[in-house]
Length: 308
Ligand SMILES: NC(=O)c1ccc[n+]([C@@H]2O[C@H](COP(=O)([O-])OP(=O)(O)OC[C@H]3O[C@@H](n4cnc5c(N)ncnc54)[C@H](O)[C@@H]3O)[C@@H](O)[C@H]2O)c1
Image (tube, protein in one colour):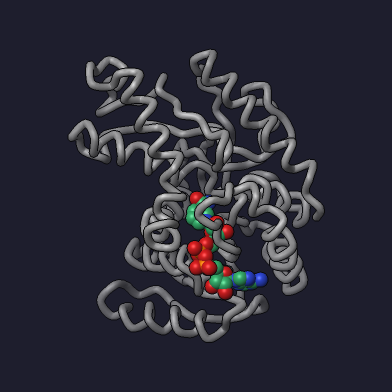
């Protein structure tokens, strides 16, 4: 499977490339970036490790060379400023993103190709990609709340001194201010976290607020997120590549689940070689369902303001 990373010279794109190289499953990684030197440099640096890391083909190249990709991973974009909400980025990023979609279209792409959006605001851009490229909705998805879910589970594990991979705690909705924690299904090795004395309402509130502020915290301290987002991207790509049918909180066009329609956001989604195979409507607590619907409304309001 070939993955073309558009914006692969940047922090998120290069961290994703490294995570995919270490994962050893994709067969080819193409780095494409508006800054050609950066793309060449990142591809070369990764290539230098291939003797020890794996036998993938790794190279830089343009849209014509990317036309045979199985997955177009779009990480190109402008970074959020520390005090800027993800949705405030919208007007700065939409024009750039539409230009990328048009370049993919002009150079050609396979009918079974997937578009995997990471650039922010990810839910809005995923929706635009679906509208612009005319691919089936299943093949157009965004990272959504994957990174938030990983941050949430990792921080809970750290605070409660549990193994991070045994903690499963979802974030759903918008990758942004209206995201919501799903405590109704949060578990450690299958047992409910809500049943743990330390997991009090005040702990729940603190750890969620810290999760929500994690993006801004990382931007403030090191300029932008990289490693964790790279791992989250790899998780989605491996679910596709291995046809895993993993339930993941990726963003895609929701058409009825949880009484939400016509908007891209994260609901529980089965990810396989087809892309987002289906949405699964698992009963949430009433306040969670209401927060998910409020998140959809917030995204619709933003979408209405987009000039694409
Ligand atoms: N969805 C998520 O969970 C998540 C997490 C972190 C970052 N992000 C988003 O990812 C994006 C990238 O962040 P970053 O930290 O890697 O930024 P960065 O500045 O390090 O990298 C962006 C790269 O995009 C390239 N680029 C710009 N315009 C381009 C174009 N038209 N065509 C091709 N390449 C182009 C730049 O040259 C640069 O190398 C941002 O929008 C950021 O908000 C999303």
